[in-house]
Length: 483
Image (cartoon, rainbow, N blue to C red; front, side, top):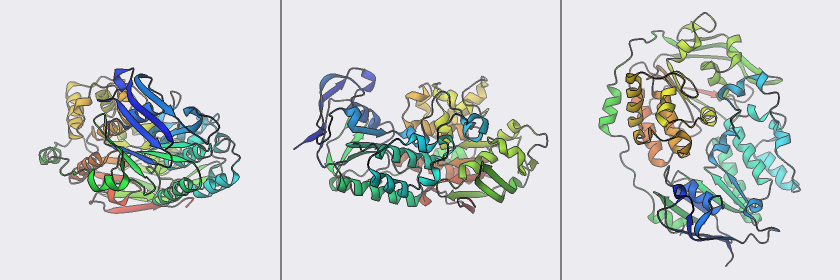
């Protein structure tokens, strides 16, 4: 049988990237693999080793990509990593850049970034699937996280790879697009020589076109098994993930003596936002009262992140709109930094922008001052609060680790602790469970549920998964594109 990828007895030169045992992994012709494991289990390390990104000290790594014209991994394997969900952020990208028109002049547009292809049928199919036509003349920086995901998938599939590796491909996509992506991947596996490797953190998120599963745990790669065998024998038994003791500690957390007492937390009056000839929000009226728990939803590109950027004052257009926060009208003299002290926020855009390789506890502490990076030394009692919240999220042991050396799931937990560290009156969670494994998703949901039980806490929660919403949701706002 043809082995597309064959790794035998692999041990990387660099000890930082080694597994507990030499790696022996193969992908045979016709197979489609799911690499499944918890956050920080070693899934991305395994992929990097299979792709030849980690030179070997021992063992062999061989490829056979026939009928492809070349036999190099570079030409035949395309990898969409977790951060690609949010676009190719680099050192020149900053958090609010998407909302600042004067910093978008040199940004490329979708049309020029997709590349050329001779497979017109595939291009047309992908354009229809992901609704690419309306995006063609948009600047990449203006795409929502869901639209960026569609762009990355289209661009990669147009290169006609022999092997396509995707890290959590369904996150960030609305329900309709998730189903469509599943269908198009299944059709591609039937119609071409394309083989697929999915890297998954959710154990129950394995599509039915996957033939085999590679379980990874604590930097140990298990035996490759069929999809059926995995579901029959390998499903984890996850029970309590958030102790009753920690839940009581959270419920009994002392309140600040500097709280706002306005009944209206957010008030948008007839708000419209446009970029050029594109209308994102049109005459929106929205009032959030103290203690309400709102679910904000809508298809990719409907304007959810733009709306939240107005609430958080990250969007310059907010100053031209009739917006009040905690009963104070924007532009009436109150410093936005004073208002931000009462808001906790996490989002895909924030994860994309956070490229600071600081100790993890400093990342959490940056939430005290709403900065990307830590520029003011916290007081001892503030550092104690950072450690307390890290312990709540189960990441206290990571406090001295550099942020960029963490797995994507660990990074997300750190950014969540950053959002909670002020014990905010208004908590805004935009796709908070992106990239988290099944255990951590349950833990974070339990933490949010406990937080919602506390007096006068107000929440805006964004997700494309109905089962991720807290049970305490009281109200809903559904945005529709261009409406």
